[in-house]
Image 1 (cartoon, rainbow, N blue to C red):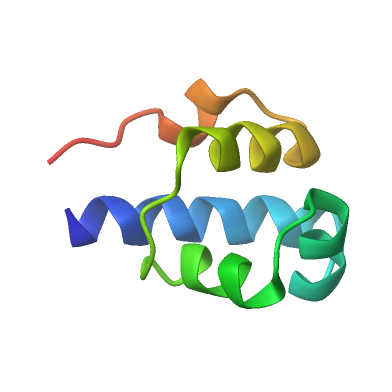
Image 2: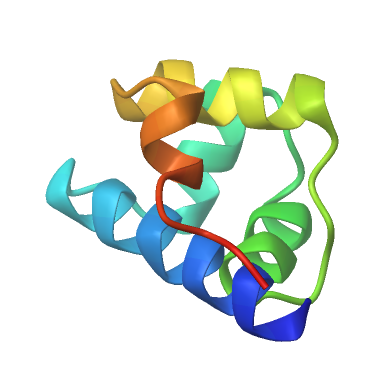
Length: 72
C-alpha cells in the first residue's frame, strides 16, 4: 500500500510542479490545507475520493490518469 501512495504522491507533485504552483498555492486553489497536500504528496495520507476529484480537476487530469498503473 505504501508504494502505491508514494507513486500517487510523486505523480501529484510532478503535475503540480508542471503548473509551477507551490504546495500552498495549490492547496488554496483546491480548498485544502497545505499540510494535507504535503501529506498526500509524501504518501503519508490515503486520499478520499472527493479529494482525488478536486485534486485531479485542478491538475487538469482525470482521476483515472492519477491512478493509472497503480497496483499492489
